[in-house]
Length: 438
Ligand SMILES: Nc1ncnc2c1ncn2[C@@H]1O[C@H](COP(=O)(O)OP(=O)(O)O)[C@@H](O)[C@H]1O
Ligand SMILES: [Mg+2]
Image 1: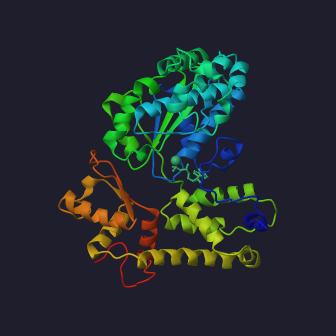
Image 2: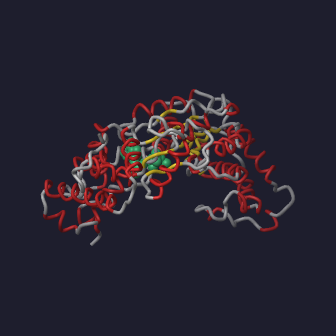
Image 3: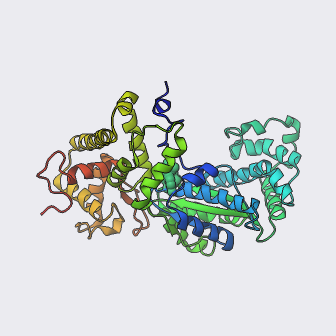
């Protein structure tokens, strides 16, 4: 029998994917009411695109997907006059800005297809579907915008080869058409498509990320009828939003902090309830146990969920079915401690490097290259050398050749937090003092 089903769940309740933009996602999004309101307000009332800055795994993508869906629902129910409709999937920013721009236009064209009925019902102008399909089938889009590799590739291939290779199907022609469709469908202030430009930190160096965003400013960020939400971690979104050329185009970043501890039990219970198919379902990781994991992982939701899964699979369903809550909780805590100790044992570091890890944890887990004095180094190069060593063991991540010295581009990883846990609790060596060696 399936693992989860035997425990009484329809599927994995600790799934680490972002929450979907639908009713389920809305119900499972816990502890984000203020952020949701603020995001919706800015999306609707400001003419600048919203920027979200926050560590990986805190819940940025989930928040945006749910917010965009809520916006579309509020139009449907008549609570809002502005028609906002989410693009079908998040866009990942690419270093090749031309390719990225194409992906954005392609996503908009696909959204017009998807929402044809919705737009018509709202009395909005829609492009002729036949034209749209011809464009989506044209070779120019198939090579650039990702038409062929797109999971929605089924839409292509309906038009004849002669039609889509005919004169006039050019990149520029397509973009002009998309721009026209947008301004026809969404006259000033009446809404638009909401697109998520996600994971800006994948372009690791802030000057490069700034460059790409500057290049997409005119073709993408200035398009009518579109609201972009731009997300990044490790200070990159903040860095990009501060670019003079994007002034007035991007908002001041909203900081997304970890979901506060007091919401965590409810957050997990909501999932367990949603996924349970029996009244007596047995959760390998209860709300209470999850609180412990969340604390150890330094309030990283994605990491915590992924530990919850790993622990679940480390034992047979029979163990959970035959044990009481206290026994399961102990097993989970032991499992996490074992993992932490295993990580710590495998690491050979000089005392100075250990101290850097401890000190970095002590100041919250992230710093910028310019913080060397705070961390007890006379110069940046010296700190850099130590950071590189921690990075080799996967205890921190950092950006190379960072140009923005204030950017908090050095950050403890989930493995780093586990090792820190092992050290600060003295799990292996009780004589090692934790955070503040005297
Ligand atoms: N407010 C929330 N309530 C419940 N689960 C959440 C919430 N925010 C995020 N999650 C879950 O946490 C994990 C990480 O969220 P995600 O949105 O992918 O983070 P980010 O984009 O910041 O890296 C996902 O599994 C997601 O379902
Ligand atoms: Mg994300």
